[in-house]
Length: 113
Image (cartoon, rainbow, N blue to C red; front, top):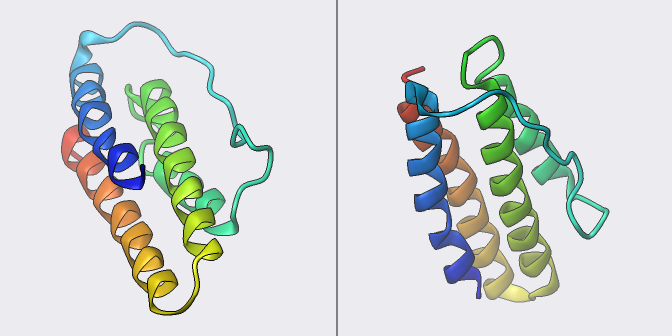
């Protein structure tokens, strides 16, 4: 399931790239909390870093949506990693960190920042 959720990032990043390129409409609202109602501190920090990357840009509204989706995926990933034990927990946490890093990098490249 985690692998499936992570593969959602690619279409999200592509959509963001199209929207950042001027194909999108006006700003949209985003949720600021995970559907579960409680975010891990790392997921909350990721969202702040992600949205800060696009402050003042024309793609800010779309970035908030994309960052929110990625935040929720990261939060799920971290919660699953925290539920694991031993080396499986360490490997899962590393996968989550890699996901967060690659998401920010992909969004920065898409937006040309």
